Amino acid sequence: VQLQASGGGLVQAGGSLRLSCVASGDVRSINKMGWYRQLPGGERVMVAEQIRGGSIMYGNSVKGRFTLSADFGKKTVALQMNNLKPEESSVYLCNADVNSDYRVVVWGQGTQVTVSS
Image (cartoon, rainbow, N blue to C red):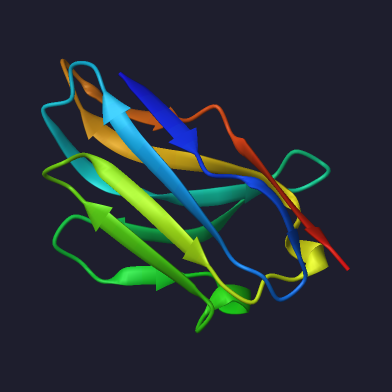
């Protein structure tokens, strides 16, 4: 099972970016999908995620600016980020809780988002 992420880049403060991620391999179903960002010390912080059949959850700092779109049938998840702030520059990682031969949590390779002031 793999997650392929795309869509990072450089944007000015106040700008927008859209991140996309698709799951491939022996994915029988997905329990949860979302996006995290990695802090300088290595900790990963939830940005937005959705449990299949459940509500979308957002980190407090992004509510009202970021929108998560998860399609559990198509195994894709996208994150529309608007009004970006310089402090949100980070590596963003796609994450999925997947049912394959076994249940496993999978991370994508990460995509760099840089917001200039």
